[in-house]
Image (tube, rainbow, N blue to C red; front, top):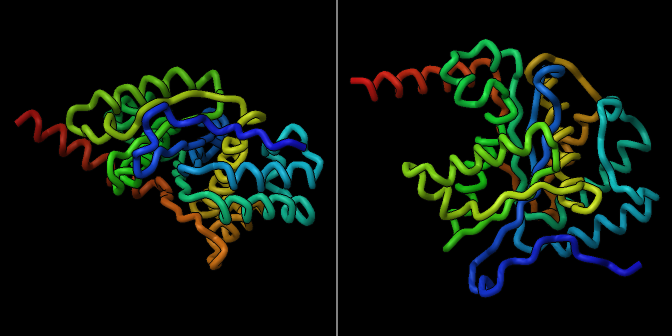
Length: 264
């Protein structure tokens, strides 16, 4: 089978950059129905090796439509987990950096209105914003950073994510956002293998956060250890966080104090 690269090509004349990153991101969980939401994904400047590994595994395991997890996969065991572990190892061998944020939905809902209104009364946008800021900080360690973001095409979220992305770029107090975040698009995970990897990571991180926040132990969280396993053959590093009740309280207090200081 001929390999077709599905990764966007950097704009003409940009090859002098230290790195033009493409990032693939996906969410897991809806705040109306689940106790935790997560937003996760990966960035790299060279997705070719990952594409080749991923396509091989899809052929090997006869998954022509790619992989896309569902709530049933939280309880995956045995051979299913072993297959997913192969995909995790493919990510770890070929992708530069992973990002993930999980949010306790109930605690977000009980937070001060200053938090809820800023993030559109949906913890998904808190996770999205936090991950985007982490991406900016990571890419900004190099010279002339540039990142193109590709998110899974979720109609109920896409427009609001674009609005938040634009607000971030227009924020004069954070000029690094505009300098780094160059574009955001939304795509079909069947076509973009990076979105399939983001989907797998988002579900694993949500399973792990359900354990951390509420003591729920789903077998899928076994892959969290796989993501964190060290090996000379692995290149992926991670920036991840969990917005628990206590962390949301700290954020709330900082926001309230900031608002009060502006009125003085």
